[in-house]
Image (cartoon, rainbow, N blue to C red; front, side, top):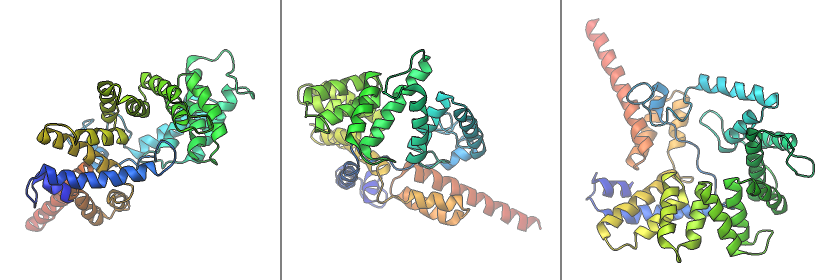
Length: 347
């Protein structure tokens, strides 16, 4: 909260330096927690719903920031989900891999479930691979793509212990299959195994090569790992990759950029750049301190007063989604008061 106040001058003197100190402290703790999880870091916190999208965006139909990319209507979501469930039961691999992605990452209307994701991964593997682990012949390109993703996800989940017991040997086997098929996440995870010596001897050159191949597939984790592997020898190439991953929202990319910015020559410019990245981490890596889940839970059960209070707390802490949702709920409350007052006068 103090970080945001010093950044904006609300209730405190404007001071980028003071704001930086607060945001840096929070961000470093968040990254420490992120890295204390499974290999390659913890899964991000659940998606933060923007309540304006429930009403087609803050400025009208299809203008919400995620309206074109995320399904925000529960009925529409249930309809599309049933479509994919039906086709997956009939053996459609495109629907099956859609469900893998849905349940592995989670959605506003479908909580993350590794167990369910595994069911569909195994269906795909059984359908597209032989018992020896060879890809079946005469597959169409969509099936090949699904096979690569399923193999990579299966290996990744064994590496991270998600829905299964951690098994480095199984992880290595399936990640190699995914990597050989050009799956970006497989290339990055396999590179991590060579970098850390997990189930294989440490091989830094092999790791860097795999990270580079992941970059070619535009994988954000690969961009970060490749950047940090070459940053001393090729700082500009590393910086370009970190910026690209940060644009896509990779939390570790923002952290490394912020740490770099704090050492740059121009204090004023570098301070604001560092604050922007540290603030991103504080807001998006808030596993331990976020008021957003309680606010949304109150909104879902119809307790708009409690939801408004919690979203206002989030707004004071600098959360963009908190500011948006608090404003929407306060506007709604004001309109209801205006309507009641008008009704009393007319009566």
